[in-house]
Image (tube, rainbow, N blue to C red; front, side, top):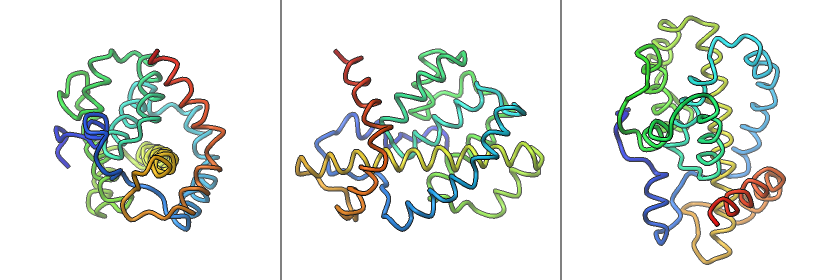
Length: 205
């Protein structure tokens, strides 16, 4: 749960020739998480109005989980959102690399460390650490943190699975993945990640 560990996102960017090793969805798990996402939708809408977690803090949570799961699409999108929320480019890069803690407030650090743990344990955090999160932030704020963690984790693995299918077409297969699961998630998420992918390529030119 160390905040300064190097990220899978960095490894994927710096070593693109390696086997595709990021977490991807198997279809049954995707369905389970998708149903959880739908169940969370009212809570997500409520979060927008309560603003117990401001956009700055929210962006840090999104980038922190993304730094573990390595979704390049989520990294690109939430980096842009973080800049709009007031973070600078160095802070964004640091969050993705889990490097310097500059710009991280003391009251945010526990949540961000928990976010790393949450992602590294594939949404199965230690009950004691979860209890500590609720003790520190209170039920309402901790509930909002958990909703955002589930949201970004779902987005990350969708993005990774989308990319894994494209990688498979190029001859680089994801470890422990099955092509039919990748295809199903690819088709389901194409309306989202297709445009994001095009925008990313456009910005690179």
